[in-house]
Amino acid sequence: MLVSPLAMMAAGFTFGLVHALDADHVMAVSALSNRKPGVLKSLQYCLSWALGHGGTLLLLGGLFFGLGFQLPESMQLLAEASVGVLLIVIGGFSLWRIRKQKLQLQVHRHGDMVHTHWHQSAAKDTHGSAVHNSAVSVSETSEKNKSSGQLNKDSHAPVMVGMLHGLAGSAPALALVPVLASNGSFQGQFGIALAYLLVFSLGVLFSMGLFGLGLGLMQQRLQSVSLRLFQYSQYLIASASILFGGFWLSQSL
Picture 1 (cartoon, helix red, strand yellow):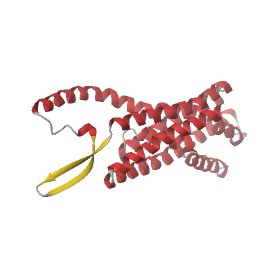
Picture 2 (picture 1 turned 60 degrees about the vertical axis):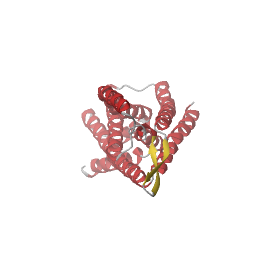
Picture 3 (picture 1 turned 180 degrees about the vertical axis):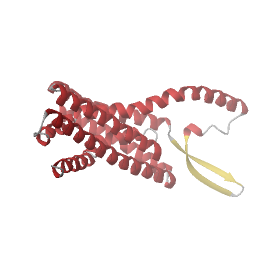
Picture 4 (picture 1 turned 90 degrees about the vertical axis):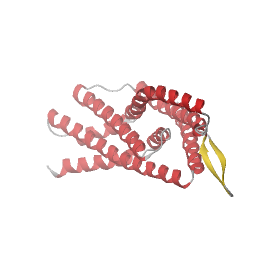
């Protein structure tokens, strides 16, 4: 009896590892991380997405196996189509933010030495007049007041996207559970079903955490090598999100 449940849990964890790296999942978290690149931010976005995905799956599993509730097919189709729309919106918003931080080539002279480097336009006026610096300090104060609200938005967005993915992709995960928990009492079946979904979600969390860590390290490396190359990678991710979202939407309708 011990071998069978352990085999189920191992299979669930393995399926979760693979499921996390579905193309739409990877594209969504990559586009979200594209907004604020960095190791910690990418890891935070990926883990938050996985928590939203797993929480939705556990909730639906509890309703399905505990109360006999089934998600209407129309709602599932709507959620699948919404994934495509969301990828397009995230990609478009990411492109807009990249354009705001457009790079410019600056030339500096130090005596007889002349050198050039790429530099973000948002920071180009930091050597301006004293009046301009005073205005900047005032704007920085107001910017700090907005930062807490923006931080909450940034932390909530990946969770909401993960919940939508969990809603859209719940059918394949839930369809396998009745086969695994077909024997025993109702309490035993319910316990096995929730345990399987929990282990499956832990596999998703672990795999997505590794992906976020790798993505953040890659972004950090690109920034250190070439800021221009890093910006090209941002354009590539945002454009791919829009294109893949359009393809996903065309397949869902």
